Amino acid sequence: MVFDKKYSDEVRQSAVERVRQRRLTEPENRSIVREVAEEFEVGPQSLRKWLARYDDGSYDYDSADGHGDGRDPGTAPADRPDRRAGQSDLHSRIAELEHHIAVLEEDNRSLTRVVSLLADQLRDATTRGVQIPDATVRHAP
Image (cartoon, rainbow, N blue to C red; front, side, top):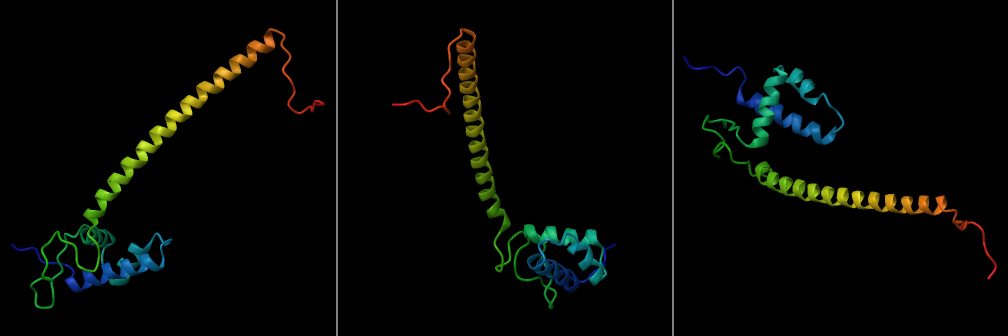
């Protein structure tokens, strides 16, 4: 028994395109998927799946003649960049930022040690009775 599609490819494509348009014009709206699902009378979870498949390039919408859009599933349409290519850029950026964080954390540890040493020296000087000059008092030249 063959599974019958509940929604036509035209409905799927229109709903996905509507979500993409609204995300561009209303980036702060967090309920776009739910609202578009109601508008097209489809399930919100189905729409989320279609969006995910569209984003990763695995959804092959059928054309009007029923033979697909002429591209292999898994390849990005010509009108948008391949998300997988951008992921390697993201991974390299994440690695770069993690390295930067490690350097900053080491700098922070070094500064903490220096402050601790200076505090120890100040404490030793005050316990021996050495007068620490007040930097706010101006002395005559």
